[in-house]
Image (tube, rainbow, N blue to C red; front, side, top):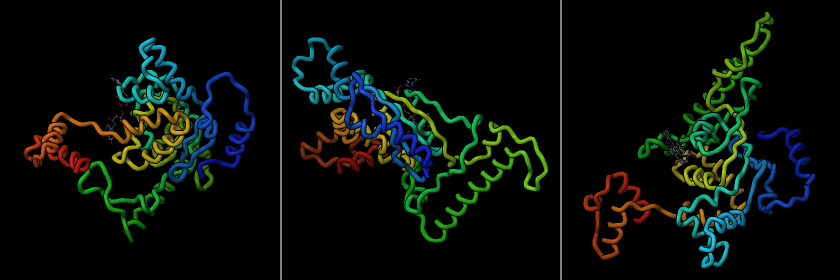
Length: 306
Ligand SMILES: Cc1cc2nc3c(=O)[nH]c(=O)nc-3n(C[C@H](O)[C@H](O)[C@H](O)COP(=O)(O)OP(=O)(O)OC[C@H]3O[C@@H](n4cnc5c(N)ncnc54)[C@H](O)[C@@H]3O)c2cc1C
């Protein structure tokens, strides 16, 4: 379970006492505030604070543009213009703070996004819970034959059952030993000093859950979402990115729509790809050899353009 009943009650109590404010408020984000959205088997994301809305982006852009924005007639148009032309700093005027519970191996990928502020649960100070990510059977897949960094067909039958059993039993054995090393008594009852928490944790596998607060501005959040909500991202981080994206969509609907259009749904073309498209539009048949592209580039190009 992602949250205990006490934690759920704390969240409901925080939501039960709204206060009036003069600050910009996004109705869409207010609906998410504090609530946990479950991800994977024990994880979640929840918005614990945010600053700004679509109008904060427009407001900042108009200050920096001065009189130059007069020809941009509406907020939506301006936001789309900013997104299209990589004028990113107005998007940095919006910020969000998330509480995330995630497996350590997902945290290792996530932490590579340096343009955010993080504070992680201390396993030097506190004892970690017996919570490990065990993939659902449909997410237990074989190594991909075409992508060294991906997975292929779903494991089936006895192999799937054996792998799941290994994952579960290794996690439980490691946790039993973690508890055993921390404890003041050995299994036979004889006393021991108890190993420091900061050392005992090193034996836990990378599917153990950790938690952190993660604060990021909207520009860098979009960068994170573009990389991690992408189908090439590992499933286990992608589902977190998708849960966050759903909140962002409600928070800043105009900015999110522009992001969906230009970044998530858009494509970047190399000069070679532009040249091939032009030749094709002129009626020429261009194959891989004539394209000047590498095998990998051509595969990606044809996946997009046929
Ligand atoms: C599909 C996928 C596969 C990956 N595989 C691997 C892998 O095999 N091994 C691996 O190590 N990583 C891997 N990564 C991580 C990847 O290389 C990036 O580290 C990660 O995506 C964070 O991106 P970022 O640096 O742009 O983000 P951020 O750290 O948030 O930075 C955002 C932008 O700020 C600028 N910036 C931030 N810090 C600096 C700095 N110190 N100096 C200069 N500019 C800075 C850069 O322009 C950067 O693009 C993978 C990522 C993805 C999405």
